[in-house]
Image 1 (cartoon, rainbow, N blue to C red):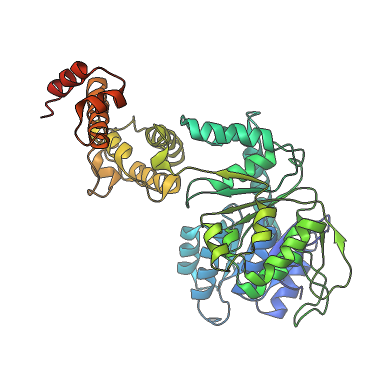
Image 2 (cartoon, helix red, strand yellow; image 1 turned 180 degrees about the vertical axis):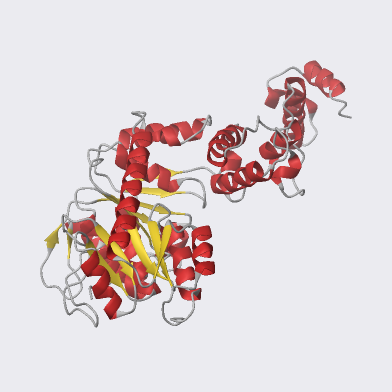
Length: 457
């Protein structure tokens, strides 16, 4: 049985078999000898391998421990695989009389199923078909990604701040500078990280992402730096870490603010020396990996609290990109809403023609605490639920406790701006009209006329 997390350098296609029965493991391996079949005996080890190399095809027995005679553990594993790697084709294994769970698995997202006892030729046929479909989908994705030479094409914006960020990405990408991307959750930090990779001279090599908050502390070190055979119980073979796996490419460390303090010194040493040392190893391995980090946290505050190393912060932030939240991006809410409508119209087979006026006004006025990610979910739900030819306010199901919408009529906008300016000037001048007029850059009679027109007593 191969250890969880082993990275394979075989020229064969790699599959993952999630099965706890040693006899069935051998049988499947024999039936699929044309493939390199990795083995996982339970949910935890299966998910570890999914995170590491995202196999094109997974063969999943629904009867996994601790529910070998049921399907609850297998179905839970399937749901997590679909969340981690939605493009993976999962073929589930069921008992002869267990059609109900097979149908349930297909509903969750499984590609196909077969029943025990299986025929070798049939299993090989299903696996081959799944692999071909996966390759076609990946090729389509690659073509869609490269249809435009501009790597930042996925960033939809008309906001000057965001456009400035895009230009910065284009200037910084060809360098090897370590980049820190900051911003609230859902603002698109990983999109910027991928753009940095695609516009660099590393674009043909791997972009490897790891979420520092999603992996338990006791596993994160081995995930990042790898381990040698015998480094700990269960380490039966040498395994390279994500830093080494990204050699020649880009390593994206998401939620770097959650990196355990005990690992920060080791990451700092890599950034300084550009070498890694695997767990249980004694030799230094040179690695040419560019590092891009992201966080929604205030690293300066974490430094003040003693939870983040100041010297590591300076190494990570050679270049800093601060992504503004959606509520601060002028005009982008409506622009993104139309873009997502077009996207989900295609995905869901709908033909909805835009938004009702009150719906688009609500979109512009909503604070979007979840940023672009929240909007994407809201528009997708609205497209699915809409009964008419346009998205209505009810379809959006946004909370009603919103501030009054900002006016779009130019006369009203101008009046509001003038009113605010006069109020600020009068407040600064403590009610002195002559001084307020000087602050506004107008004459005292003009200010009196303006106050009369705006009905300001």
